[in-house]
Image 1 (tube, rainbow, N blue to C red):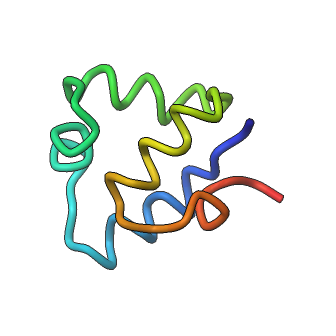
Image 2: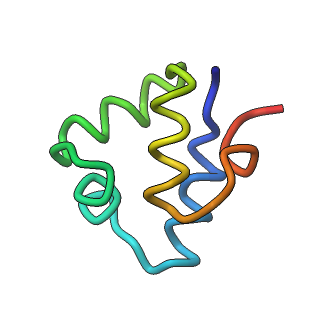
Length: 64
């Protein structure tokens, strides 16, 4: 499953959340979150956890 970095950045911006804040909400280090965001291809569980940390539906952060 591919996540859209742009859509994640928009969701973060709307919540005034940094990558560090997202990493904390997700439960990983900032470095690990950057790896997850840069690889873009994630498992459905990972996409779900990112969406939950951002407070959005998973369909809002995946590429169509």
